[in-house]
Amino acid sequence: MIGMTLFVVTEIAAALGAAAWAVVGALGLAAPGAFVVYAIAAVPTVVLGWIVARLAYLAETDPDTMAG
Image 1 (tube, rainbow, N blue to C red):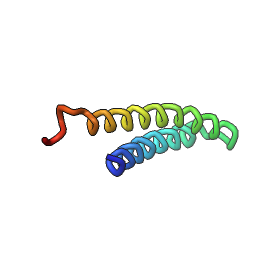
Image 2 (image 1 turned 180 degrees about the horizontal axis):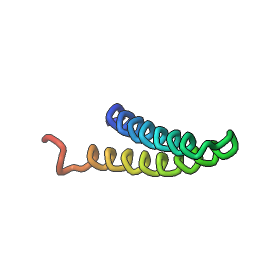
Image 3 (image 1 turned 180 degrees about the vertical axis):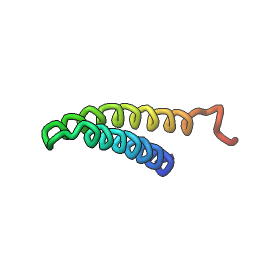
Image 4 (image 1 turned 90 degrees about the horizontal axis):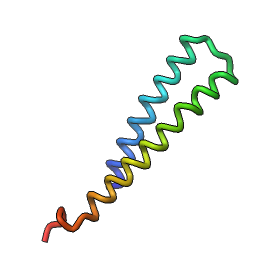
């Protein structure tokens, strides 16, 4: 559960980081503007990471999916 959650969150962070990097490059932003764009991209990364972790935990602790 933990390994797969980390993998998915890493992929989300990489995709949003690449998108933010592309926006910064396309707009030609200096360091302060780049930090703002990266901070904005960090918010959905954290939210989506939390959702993925919560769903993985719920799936692993659901008694209906336990072998028994």
